[in-house]
Length: 393
Ligand SMILES: *Cc1c(COP(=O)(O)O)cnc(C)c1O
Image (cartoon, rainbow, N blue to C red; front, top):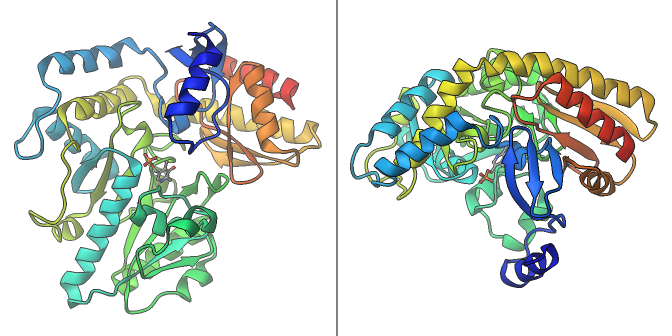
């Protein structure tokens, strides 16, 4: 079939929940993707901050192939070795104690919300606990995750959502304090807001929320689904602030392409969940967990964080030059290899131009061009990207 025939068929059979760009991707290699016509794209989108280790990575692929031939699925009625290995690595790297594997970021958030409610329920027996979330946040599309997503446009048609959620202003500690009551069981936020437009939390906000939580026995839930797994230069973004949440949600780059997420919690919180409280058929299956386990090994072996810090700083400096040079680019925000530039031109048009010119980037918020490249990129890749970006702007 031709590209157009594939697109026509897709538009007939897929639910129309995305306005997709008119390319049909076929294969990947390193930092590049190729469509079915053989056109090459430099990938600064990584399937939305997922493919951190680059495409067609032999070491990663071999680990998965080996697991496929051994055992793909078991359910959680039994133990399996990859899940045990992966959970130990997630616990160690997050500094938290217990892990629950899910199939997506959304489900990690669902689990985190349920855990927070159960923890509070065990304390006072009440069933009307409240959660404070942030405006312009993004936590996913299932009913629980959507309920804490501070974007009325995503929520409106799907009400009623889960109750007891209040929205504070991100990076505005006073607005959080105003919402705290004796019913508050959790404060949930992204240390770097991704979809909302690449807004890193301020030091003051992170420290302040931690203090509010400590003083009131409220659980701090950090959504590290997008900004975690090395993207900011630390394994998890909250480490940039020397803050440890009570519950952390991870996904996206956790499996580097295999659909897997997780939430992890401190022991005193995690112990609120007992058999029967939560479950999943696929979550933590051996194939997904073999990917997670390999990803952690490769991060260490290939010193991924060092590369993020070095190339991230270079990317930031190059983007700052773009801000200087182009009137239609007014600011840069970000940390490490999650960076955004604010545009006065329609972002969608620039994204389209970039794709035409062989560069995949994505939008965030209403006016931000977002870059979340593979964490293995080189300075040369940044230079190549900048050249295409300039031409496209
Ligand atoms: C993508 C994302 C989610 C949802 O993850 P899915 O895997 O798409 O369900 C949740 N939180 C944040 C911060 C995200 O970026």
